[in-house]
Length: 117
Image (cartoon, rainbow, N blue to C red; front, side, top):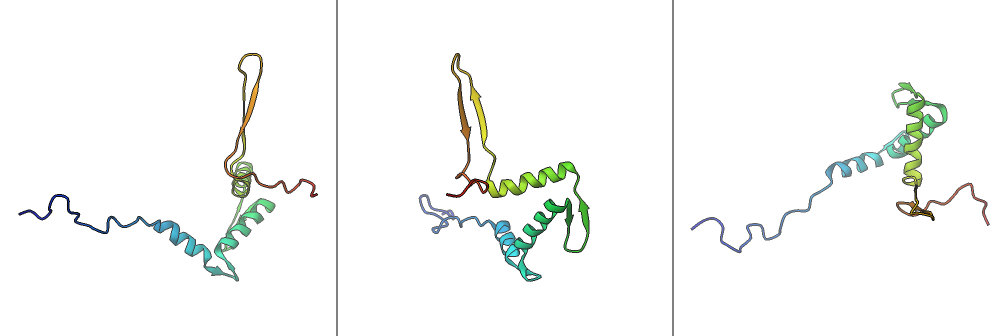
C-alpha cells in the first residue's frame, strides 16, 4: 500500500497563507525610532528638504546635489504619493462631435488651493 490514499489530503489544514515577509519587515523597520522620530517620518522629512533645497542629505552627512531630471523625478514621486496617479485626459473624435473623458484612480484629492466656503 502506498503512502497516499486517493481522496485523502496529506495536509488537512491546507497550504499555509503566504506572508508578505519583506513588506512586514520594512513596515517594522520604518516604525523604529531614530533621533526622536520614526524612520518613516525622518525619510519623509529628508525628501521634503531635498525638494526645497535641491540637495539630498543622508543621515551620515553625505550630500547629493540633484540635477534637473532628479529634481523633477523626486517632485513627481512625492506628489504621486500624496495625490495618487495623475489624471489622464483622452479626447475621442467620432466624426462630427467630440467626446472627452478623464481616467482617474482612487478618490479625488481635495484641492488645497481652492477657496474654502
